[in-house]
Image 1: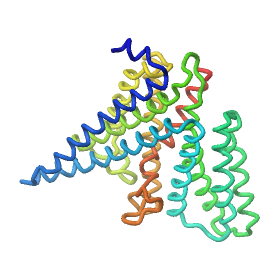
Image 2 (image 1 turned 60 degrees about the horizontal axis):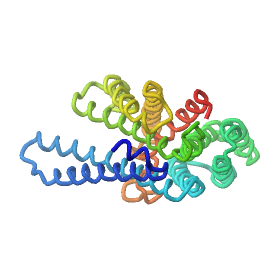
Image 3 (image 1 turned 180 degrees about the vertical axis):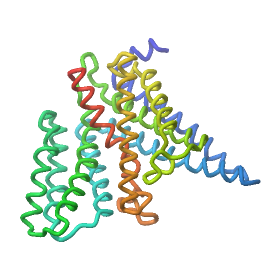
Image 4 (image 1 turned 90 degrees about the vertical axis):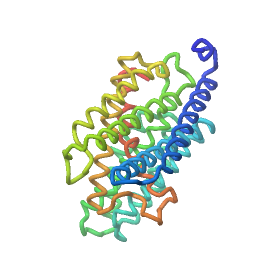
Length: 328
């Protein structure tokens, strides 16, 4: 079977990968759905159903990510870049909606949504990687406060600009590195960029899932209770181990050797899990539990930023680590 897979073209190998992943998700989702019919008999069962509910929520995130990447791969590199630009647009919209702005911010917001975002993704699509990596942290971060200053509103000036810059950094800069992974050029790895995106998403999701399950099972005291009641270093470490091990196992779909894949997966898991914790701190600061409001989602996706926050942190670290070390 392995020999048959090797004889397939790059596109056929990616298609086979998606068939396998969708098949696994269908089996797991049907099983989780059937388990919901189990009746509550005591308090233990109620706790079990609550855990099942959390598991199905994480499963929904996995479905969302896989469907998005399948569409991105199916429509081609250019359309994929546009697709991720739209996701970045709606994620930034959610972020800004929960960060109060003033009239003096309107020009900066127009700059962010209708200049910075399309230029950043255009740089990705045209593979101007050297400029793409510094466009936001250098040029945009200097331009945004200048535009705000020209509006003449000095009230809470630093705080307002810091919020907008942080939203641009997470939602636009972070998300733009996902389609950029599709375009990285490794030796003897042409046409297999989708595998790199799959590798990144799968190891980060595995890390988050292991961390979630260990936390629910062991119920250790939180390490940062003001930020998250579920985060503790023990479950975090096991999540790192789980994600890194899966990365090493999946080395055959990457240009990395097993030990290199393990290290790259570890880097992605650290960045993704810490980014998720940072976004929890931001939600605590805003007094919300999720970016999308209940029954009234900004994007219609009901918390889009909740679904991609770990990826927004993991993608740029993973991209630059791969590009720097392997010279892609």
